[in-house]
Length: 135
Image (cartoon, rainbow, N blue to C red; front, side, top):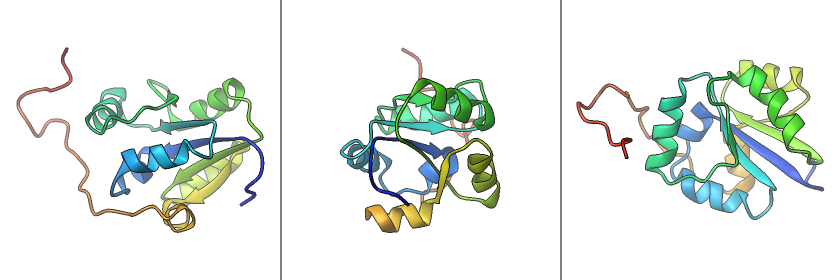
């Protein structure tokens, strides 16, 4: 991976969930990227709930769009020298490359950037009876 120029960094939601401390990773990434965000095919409320609970300040997210459409939109909106997509699966790599993004597997990215991976379980949005995302 080239380390020069400006960068837009996007985490696929599963990759973000694989991190032990996503907030620390975002804080670290802001030191050497221009923009950091989350892309996912999951419903918007699932991603929003996860990022809100961890106080992640993202510059962009996929919202109601899926990863495919979002990669193109983010690339058009955030003009940087490099666009890097961090994912977890071969499908993520294929998607990134199809849209002109560099790809890094979360394990490679974590090793390179010295981020700690965690064993956090994926959340079930229907697990609790109360919602904490109401104002």
